[in-house]
Image (cartoon, rainbow over all chains, first blue to last red; front, side):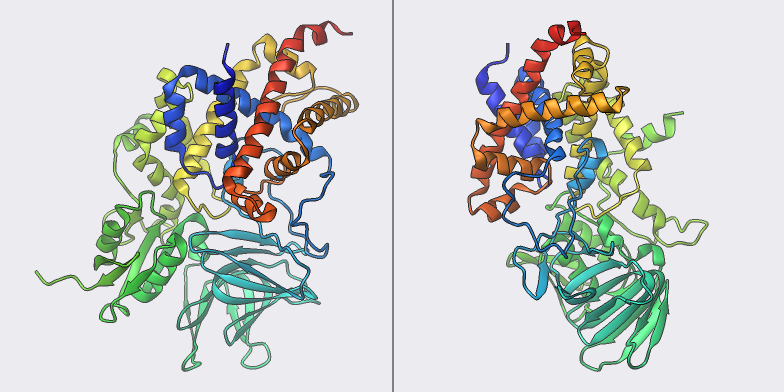
Length: 313
Length: 215
């Protein structure tokens, strides 16, 4: 017989572990290891979790506070089964739930946080960390990226093209999946699939899959180069993929992905990097590994990191 | 058959960062730069966390099978095409391990009378259900009423919070924001709800012989 205290603890661990943001699995292992009865009680609570799935059959009697205006259909990702990998996949999405019916809707993410936004027409926007995206409630076919990075998977509608603004750059989709970034120096758009039109009212540059366009805020000069389409939006899988990217850009991306502020010494800021950086599993060894791959010295500065040239041997 | 993967599993290397140039970079026949590395990213995190994952699996009741189950997890990861962003790959792997152990318990239950009782109550943990659909939906409605009745004893706020968490998949921190209460207060509400639904499982267990005798 398992006593009530253990049942209570198991219910608490179930509440924690089913949270999409839960990360302290080692502490759960500690508790489970302490007594074999703990795992039995945990499994019973897990069965209760499964049983409670039936609650999804009816809408909530009292609507939750954050229910939104009906034209913004932002469906939950996990209406159905929470079993197996579905639960794991759900764990990594945080749905954008706007709370007040305003003319525009701003969705922001903290550094290290990802969000997936689905619009009423099926268009999906994956928002990287440290980003701010503004949507217009009266026109569901426009978006403005004010900061950070977003991967757009646009459902194409020839009669209602989807427009994205980022800094001074404007893009119109021609049936496409593309990634837009607002960096400290300008805007960048990389096309993974299909094509889009840059500056439709002016230059009207067509960008096909595998093209990346960069626009400098200061000079307003636009340059187009090649990118690997498979690497576009790779940040969503926890990977940052580069071919001859300047270090300042790499540092911005890593900071956005990890939430660790990273400054770069001007002496190495424009140095080129080619490679892949993955999300760190252990924060403590990450600076060392980052230094080894980028071939720089990584120093602690405040609560962040500082990249500088290695001392000559 | 398993030799190559076991060899890889045995290496306890930390591969959080992989260089494309030099050692480890495989350009691939298709010339798609870095593609393989992207596919193997989660495996690398798994290899780096082999020991804590094994410990977790043992604590979850894997016993001597822990190594085999980790192998199974590794094969799953290899096949997995990441659909979305993995903000925390390590937590993602532990969640997979947790679910894998839960699936195994349910699979072994299928062979027991307990599983039989669950099936007759219209609850098939494996999601496999051969009951006619009209009967199934009736049973599901009955089950829903039981769960709702049990939760009704906890007060409306707990019900709303549990529904938001369990059905809509909203995180505790977001619920705390919405409700204007602390995360630990949200946790308390959820703990009480989980305590109640877990007890319902036991009840169904005890009621099993009767329900089986029913025509």
